[in-house]
View 1: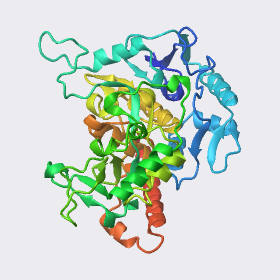
View 2: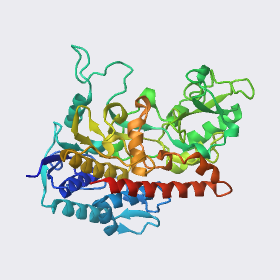
View 3: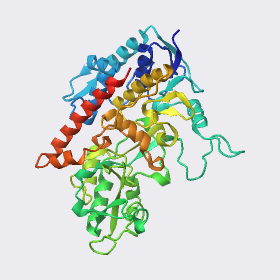
View 4: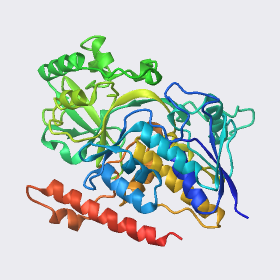
Length: 459
């Protein structure tokens, strides 16, 4: 007799998880709270409804999003072929007619003989099951998640209390994200490595020094820049400890210089003096391929982020791997509370997937749902979960979710900085004017070969 499992959430990740489980012989109850409990974002009760952009981004495998799509098609995604059917002209991107896509997704998933849809809010975690409720997780389920993922701790401690004031929260209710830039796009001749007062390893941060004139020009550009006005469901209150950088600048020209851009304890080794102001970059990955602009969470529009932040010394040609944002988003501090396959501690049959795990983007969400469904089916069959290697885009995303610093964890989308770096011999061989393109081509070829090899190991 087939095993009964529950998937919570009827979005992209939940649909992929339910389909993957049903295809592997499980009887799936798919729980979706709409229309019993509505959200401020959704317009219909259909499964797979897109509530933000209608674009799944690039289909070109030389682009990180295109490479991820290629991997997920090989893995058996049910939704990407439906997106193809609902596609509208969008150049090298896969954009869809929202209504057509949601109708196709709803009909396809519910047509599976082993999937049953139940409506209503879930307030307890299922096992075996997959939780894929996304950024608009209900308060009742969010409370259950916090209770389940917070360690018991010493006697007398309440279940939802953090273990200590320094422990990162297990569940965040909004994104306050700073941009991430590619290391190889930085002008290191204008940047120096130094931690404030030489703490840590002494050179943990990269510093972009500014003169008074450069700082004044930057503040003028920042305060005049066009800010994104979010939908009502994205509106979040600003917390004093996490204000948008443009909001701080509007409070006065010296605010940033006494905040995230303060130069104290960061003398420029080339002059021996502290600059007028400093923009610090913090390593986002172990290999040092991705660097975060410290304290630069922002609501500027993407073209404005590119224009304004490229006035920072050393960032004139910066490649943005992730743009900054602040919006409503419930997500887990995954590296601090989930296992490598995104399972709950102590329960290897309870998986999490989708934006709830700290991935950004439609393709990233459905990818984690697909892999959660595959791995739960493997677990129920007595097999261990299997993850693709970090040389693949899906594997690199999972490695980030596992290895990121819990104290600074923020959601991430697909980008080439997630991939394991090329070996030294290959990197040395790639030289000349087109080195960047050659490197990307080598990363893509290696990723495709590694993914196919891993796929052949799945049973």
